[in-house]
Amino acid sequence: MKTGDRLIEQKLADALGLSRAPIRLGLKALEEAGFARGELHRGFVLTRDPTSVAAQSTLAAVSRAEEAYATIATDVVAKRLPADVTEAELLRRYDLTRTELQRLLDRIAAEGWIARSPGYGWRFAETVSSPEAQTQVMAFRAVIEPAAIAQPGYALAPEVIERLRERQLRIFDGELEKFTIGEVFQWGCDFHEEIARGAKNPFFVESLKRVNSIRRLFAYRSFADRDGMRRHVKEHLRLLDVLEARRYADASALMMRHIRRPLKVYVFR
Image (cartoon, rainbow, N blue to C red; front, side):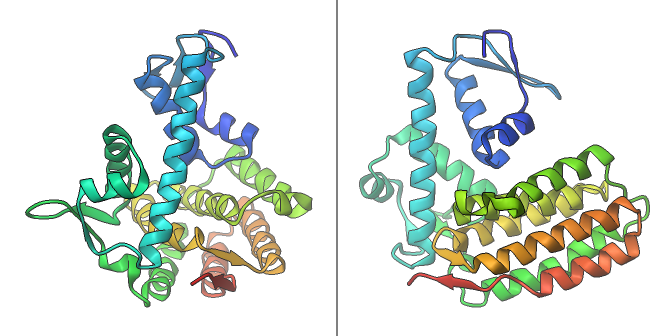
């Protein structure tokens, strides 16, 4: 890539086999470092040589941030962190700079599993460590996701369906073993969020994103039955076929059954 090239989030995610979340973080980090310029509704444009030492250093910082995020998520779910923490404690524990920590806390706060304490420090959401959290999340999804498809005027663009199908086929046709559970999980989140987006109601998508951020915490310290994951992918492909045929009532019912039959997940204690 060269200076002036346009950086499109979804194309980069597809090319690298990643979810959009780490791509988005990388693009924002490049913008903050002066290597890219964000343009409203048009993504990002490269403004400096991306192969320079400074650019590589910026991307390495993004990688460290992702590792720290995963470690914090694991520690929270495993209850190795107290409900109330200070920034000083987190700085010492995870060997982060103050800027790196602030970015992480901003991200986690946006995802809804931490908030500033009324006095001093931060407090993790009770839902994060609740033993009922996963069951409650499934019950919530079983309400909002089928309802999104059942909305008047629901429609999913053919190019969106094709993009989602291509990614699911990549997983099903032999690439499943190449990805971590976390990566496959994020692809599943992206899949469901794109389908909800067809309702043209941002509250469905925002609610689902918030719930998925909680689900993601459990994914960082679990693994799932690979055969069960392939079944899940087959259900995704079937759902896309029904949506493509615009049989939205059938698709809504299929989504309900899909959510209520979750993957068997083994959690490391």
